[in-house]
Amino acid sequence: MFNKVLIANRGEIAIRIMRACKELGIKTVAVYSDADKNSQHVQFADEAFYLGDSAPKESYLNIDKLIDAAIQTQADAIHPGYGFLSENASFAGKVESANVTFIGPSADSIRAMGDKAESKILMKKAGVPTVPGFEGLESEKDFVKAAKEIGYPVLVKAAAGGGGKGMRVVNEESELSEAIQAAKREALNSFGDERLLIEKYIADGHHIEIQVFGDKFGNLIHLFERECSVQRRHQKIIEESPSPLLTPELRNQIGEAAVKAAKAVNYFNAGTIEFIFDPKTSEYYFLEMNTRLQVEHPVTELVTGIDLAQWQIRIASGEKFPFKQNDFMQRGHAIECRIYAEDPSNGFLPSTGKLLQFIEPHGPGIRVDSGFAKGDEVTHFYDPLLAKLIVYAENRESAIHKMQNALKDFIVHGVVTNIDYMQAVLSHEDFANGKVTTRWIEKEFNEWKPAKPEIESLISAALADVVLVGGKPQSAVSNETDPFSPWKKINSFRN
Image (cartoon, rainbow, N blue to C red; front, side):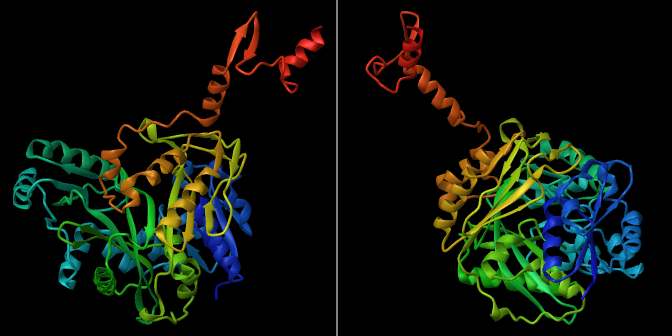
């Protein structure tokens, strides 16, 4: 087992990995920039390493500095968390070359699955269903021809990267040229790679992803599915397990397809195979593989009882994964809501500022993975994710109810959050019935506005109940006869 692990990340995921390390008796090293020197992950770690005074986000992308930090602090391994360099094959390879263990899959697996175009070709060869489409197109004429053959609507998307960047839905040929140029610009800016692919757009699809896990000895299993169809701008905001949509037969089929996909690249450690599911035909198609721990991994942990973060570390240290597929089953129901500092009523613009109050909910079946506390500063340098709120209950209906209550108890002052927005989504009849597709948010919540805060409503009601009589406030109930009336005490004092 490792003696010390450096976490090349920040926020809630860094703290999540640190907790797993501490439970295994491993010391931890945090890294930080000027922008987050007082952050919770820095305080939680055993040691902290300053990455320099360059641009804050770029500090976390400096491969040489991160490896140097591991060497200087004598860390045995580096855990990348998610985002930043977690799916960077070059980073994984350089870490291993420096005789430091990379906690994740091999650089070859990351490289094979990191390119959407190449991974689709691999999956076709492995017999995994893929969305009808074309890769390797160059000219706009090629895209026009491909779109006609596929049939509109189509999806133009970046061959590299993820997170919804470099993606455009095209409904007719007149929109195609502009969509290609916009997707190329965004892909080049985000990933340094402007290559695109085109595929059939499943308009009312469900986003189903399968957690896979394997060791370096060839053992590889799946840990069932997560439903991630509640998305804004192609980014997930609510995830749950099990999916309310899948039958046991479909669950087994998709799970087996995910294992087949992972084995095609000799995968080990934690990974996620993403599928799009068409409820009209009950067909499912491979989308991509995330070669890392997912943001939404807690829902899988809660319904299977396995600590994925701990097992990532144990597998990387050389342990054999002792479980077989039949050792696992889904128990109960788990839901995760991503709590962001953003304004859903204003295009989900990030909100920055000091957290004047930050009170997390507590109780049986409630888990909060957060990287903030009261007094912390939310800056524009990083993703505005404040916390992940996860609940577990015996069934889906109870889990929804528990999440609604937990959201009520989550108090954040100082920045605008999406908490009320989450409540509105959870309260919708479609969500209760499991009829949410990847386009549901944009259809049902495009004009959403927050309700008037409860305190304002109470004040308005109180003022409406008071009238001026002879220059002084007079309640609908006479204060002259009410022994507890504040107005009677004031009048008595004046007399």
